[in-house]
Amino acid sequence: MSSRLRQWDDNFVWHPFAPMQAFREEQPPLIIAADGFHLVDEQGRRYLDGISSLWCNVHGHRVPEIDAAIREQLDHVAHTTLLGLASGPSAELAAELVRITPPGLNKVFYSDSGATAVEIAVKMAYQYHAQTAEKEPRRNLFVCMGNAYHGDTIGSVSVGGMELFHGVYCDLLFETIQVPSPVAFRRPVDIFAEDHIQSCIDTMETLLREHHDRIAAFIIEPLVQGAAGILVHPPGYLRRVRELTHELGILLIADEVAVGFGRTGTMFACEQEEVSPDLMCLAKGLTGGYLPLAATLATDEIFNAFLGRPEEGRTFYHGHTFTGNPLGCAAALASLKLFEENAVLVNTVELANTIATELKPLAHHTHVGEIRQKGIMIGIELVRDRRTNEPFDSKLRMGHQVALAARKRDVIIRPLGDVVVLMPAPAMPSSDVEHLCRVVIESIDEVITNFSAT
Ligand SMILES: *Cc1c(COP(=O)(O)O)cnc(C)c1O
Image (cartoon, rainbow, N blue to C red; front, side, top):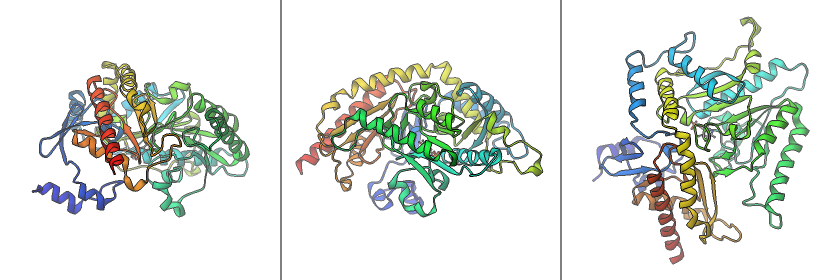
């Protein structure tokens, strides 16, 4: 007997990123509540949230301090526009974001999702060059990484590089230059890993030098390409990109939507290579994962290119109805306060160590090709053949099978293809993270045993 809610979901809700025909048959849990790091479904069954509610939750659910901040803001106003008016929480949060982000990022443009934060950065970069260029040719090309993911609106898809998500729309996208991800997992045979990575770096440099006077910006997920399957870049890569973009007059857009707010062990990934980008995109964890709020930060140099008398036409004509929503800003301020009060970054580093230890038994597993980890972002890639890294037939949906096996054990995870992803919240207690790792190992074992039996 399925409930009314279940029937309405079945009848009326089109779920994101879901093959709906298969999705319906699987009857995913219908969540009606949560507390701490657990989700509760309509039958009262509790699940450990192993993916931070899709990479955004930071301090857990129903955190008293964030709940109180939102309630308090509700007593003033839920929403008022930033088009033509200013507001308290958005002003206070902007000051705070400028304080904690890398030096030079002094202006904050709000929106409401990671994809819009990226759209804004792309449009700003393009218009910046149009309004500062002394001579032709126009800089209208963007450089992005192979397998990049920056969100699902058309501009963000244009700077994306994931065939599976983006291929269908190729006719609608603007032109980009893709540089290879500096990772060695599936490299050509007969090449050492280090040589392959060096050749990726060399290719990047060659492409930048060749096209630099047409390139507006280089957009990158700093340190880790999340949706590509938790691809971890080698140390120094981001720095090298910053040096080259600086030298060649190319803007650097750091998309910290996934890696920001503690996921890589520091507040922002750019810090680890002492990189200050020209534009930085924040979303997911900005409100502690509570409300849809995003920000694009820019340098004064970029901001100043948009100044002038209104009739000069240098205005950035962009905005969303809910830009700078006060409830979201109040949640973000409360979340940032908790980062300090609860020493969340210290916890993140401890969790990273715990996870590395707990996952050791998988290192020699016959069907684990690679365990990739940066901070508390983890990808375990399942392969058919460990020696060649030959993948499983995608029809088998091995990653998905592992998620279903984990769900039976009351743990929610969500894979990227055959990469089993663990994305615990930065404030999760060690004991929960240990449990998460153990359940994932058991679930992989169960799925592999079933596979081997057939
Ligand atoms: C999730 C993600 C986005 C898109 O954010 P949305 O809020 O889902 O639009 C953009 N960039 C990166 C790196 C992401 O992981």
